[in-house]
Amino acid sequence: MRALGLLAIIAAVTLAGCATRIVSSHVELNADFATYRTYDWGPADALPTGDARLDNNAFLRDYIQGAIEKELAARRLTLVSNDPDLLIHWHTTVARELDVEPHRREYHGNPSWQGRTYEPEIVEYETGTLLVDVLDARSNRLVWRGWARENYSGVIDNQERLRMTVVGAIADLMKRFPKTAS
Image (tube, rainbow, N blue to C red; front, top):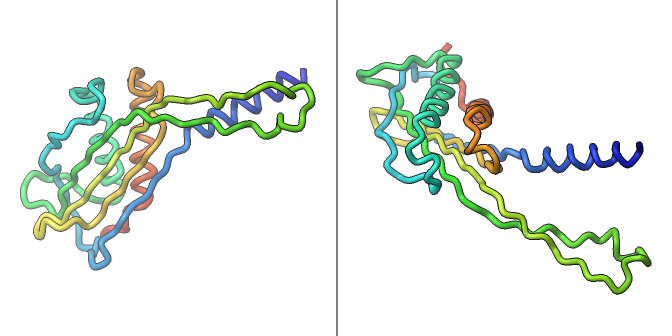
């Protein structure tokens, strides 16, 4: 029974480690976000994502733009088609990465492991990065950039997981967005 509990804890810690999202942002120092009230979408991105499953995925575009629109509305920014204060642009990439599991030191002193060799395990996974740029529409100057990076393994082929991942990443990014006019 204790072994099952230990296995459950190890599985939970492992899954939590795989789900780590790294989020960061940059704000232009002289940008006055209190003056911004409206936004529009900037030109569509022609760059590939690095994964054919996402390059023409209309759902992904809808998930990202819908989540950004929701977050901007919560900050009292209004989507307009003429003369916006801000232009919003986003891009996402996916890359395959390799990681080497570290040598397990806890077994070195165990006499039952004497004479045995331990080969490190190579783990392949997909890392997704979502980047959101916000430009001052009048000067075309970048005033804010936010990005989120996380493990996308098993996410891309499951539309609901993809939606949840994108919505969560955008929500985490937008927590870093500067205060706008009230």
